[in-house]
Amino acid sequence: DVVMTQSPLSLPVTLGQPASISCRSSQSLVYSDGNTYLTWFQQRPGQSPRRLIYQISNRDSGVPDRFSGSGSATDFTLTISRVEAEDVGVYYCMQGTHWPRTFGQGTKVEIK
Amino acid sequence: EVQVLESGGGLVQPGGSLRLSCAASKFTFSSYAMSWVRQAPGKGLEWVSSISGNGGSTSYADSVKGRFTISRDNSKNTLFLQMNSLRAEDTAVYYCARGTSIPDYWGQGTLVTVSS
Image 1 (tube, each protein chain N blue to C red):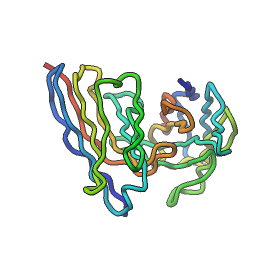
Image 2: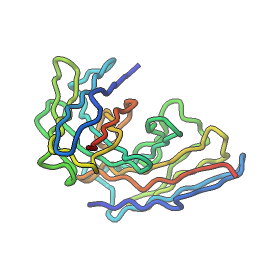
Image 3: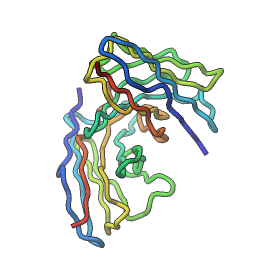
Image 4: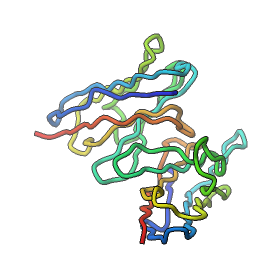
């Protein structure tokens, strides 16, 4: 199975400051069609997961542009340019290239 | 707006069975693969199973293989998860999601508790 390793697992941030979450996969996530199926989800307290970013860097409709994704092959990053109070929650990366699908452990973002 | 709505969760004894349903609306259901993802209390997300749009291809996590069966009824826009031989470690909120490679829309989840 492809292991997805996120860091840090806990991320206290100051409002208005940037934040970055790393996600590393144990195998390349480049699929035979040339696409890389790396997705980022946000789960706010008490809510279902919400997709933020797909295929490394494509932001979903309605997602603020302070969220951005980058990376390639096995090394990926989610960046929040200026953290706002509504960004509190747990963030997960997920690979959709290989079977079984696997998630990172989750990174809990909280306000200092 | 696209909607997926899970139902069928509840309390079941170890070794028992339960069938979850996911009603989909506002999109062409048969054109999309669908997935089940679960989350144990206080834990992270775990992919459980996926099925292709026509139902001809299925995949399972090793942890549920041989015990769970995913299926769909495209005439009723509904996804199912038949869960047999349930164990305490299957206790979780079960989410239905559209897609499998980059799942976009998720339901609110249905809680399955396996306990005597």
